[in-house]
Length: 319
Image (tube, rainbow, N blue to C red; front, side, top):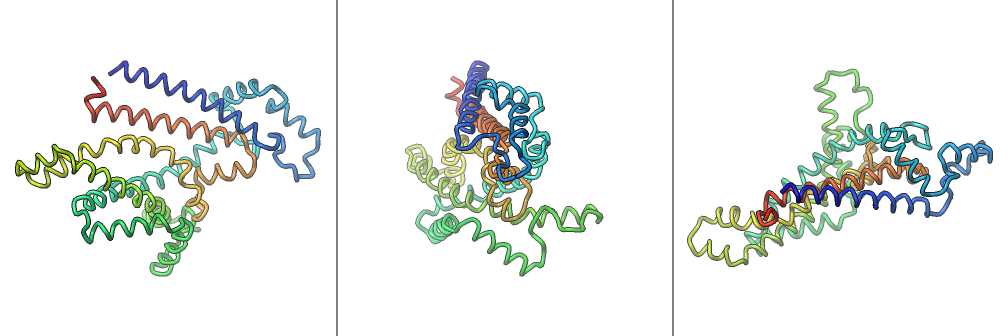
């Protein structure tokens, strides 16, 4: 067990090093010079460009720039080229804004997908299964921005509540219960929108995994013994059908960055995905590289969690 964990940790660190090298190289291979932060600004003179290059070591070889950047990143000294603010501080603030959306959206996705998918597999070919399949394809086909505007029009028109931004203007001086209620209303639609696509895809995947396991010999044997159908489906079939979802659960973490750009832009939610998009438009390379590095860390943490869950769920791995 400890040897398995040790090998996994070493592999993750080696992978993270190569990811950091490749991402740093790709950013600097992209068209345009890193020093062209604001080429249309007339106040950005050649002398200022040269001072900028020297201040951020852009006049040094690429491997030296790599060493300086990750030294500053790990010591917390990396600053944004756009506003000269500490990058980790900016990312930490946006991370706290994105985290509630991510948690609520993930909980909705996983708590709804499994009952829908399992019931569709148990009653295969019935009205429920066909209705769930049709609704899943509809949710997959509808563009996210169009569905978002439909939800906004419906909620604002029916309930007369604000949904754009993180809070209603003028709510900072009210009682904390009113502020909490206002925050929940603002968080509801982005969370539902972020969960709809995941529910449509994950419920279909749950259904297919359950159907595959339901056809196994040990499930037919359990039925032939006269076991209650709840025990057959939920103890024997579902337990083995869950194994592939252990990997999927570990890969949920990167969605904290990449899966929220459209939602945060539509709802004016100052989150991490929107910050990454704005940094790309502004060529704020320290922010881009830092977010990319954090995304890689989240992926590796997710895969490590998957490894640990596999050890718990499947005894064969421990052996």
